[in-house]
Image (cartoon, rainbow, N blue to C red; front, side, top):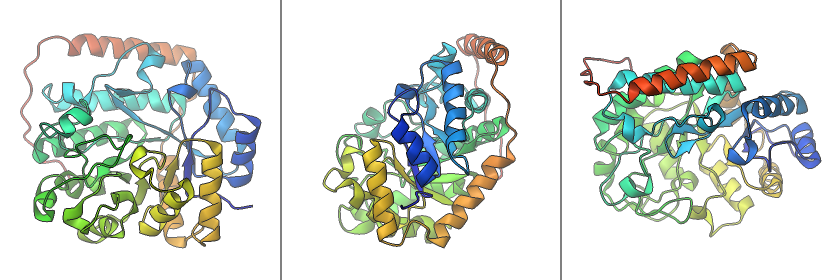
Length: 356
């Protein structure tokens, strides 16, 4: 039976099914990502995390998409709504870092190891500004670099590993990659000095980079999705010099619908993704694991070495056992912070530099 050390998988509901428990025990994936369908309350979520950890050895890493705004998995468990990147952009760098820190503390208290955040895409009028719906920190690379840096600091202070996304930038995408393939019509030089610039500046400060599913003919000469394109991965590895973990965006997205699920996993691994996110059905995860095994890629030493470094990083952060008292205290702290955030405030100017 093939192992799945390069997969991050999803679950069906708020508890492990017998088949999911068997998959975790027998296939031993790198991690599990939880979504609203898995999260009913803080107590239930923390218990599910412990159930997942106990299901296999080594225990999986726990992943979450916690950006704030439209992508807020943890806020509802606290009974609050964390603000979006777009709404924080003009509040000052301190507020961005504070938000990341509070979200990270909540994630860590529940047992999460890695947050797929921050978003480094540039908001573009008429395209990504609509598609990404407030998930971007600004129109200009310089602003996004500053916001991304302080977000990374906040997460690290909270003891949560980070992942910047969606390389090489989805801000110009005319459609949502969850639905169909965004084709970004821009010259390679233009892309490098704008959309790619935040990744160039911040990749080394992050714990991972997620490659999105947009197509970039200016880079590749065709409409191969970035996650499946060796040329895009070469830009990340060779031109930018990133030597850490590279994640695919979720392989179940509509942008990849022209390919079977197992083909998506194979192409992403061959292109250069170390970790494949397969959050849909268990059958899709099994198909991906089997296809990588058949191709001799499930235990490729390069990706496994980078994954081992990620595990060491995640394990270096202390764990705080979940408890109702600690959760209630954090809720009160977040509510107080949100009330303060709502007051008029003069933004502090940035007088850096940040270490990059």
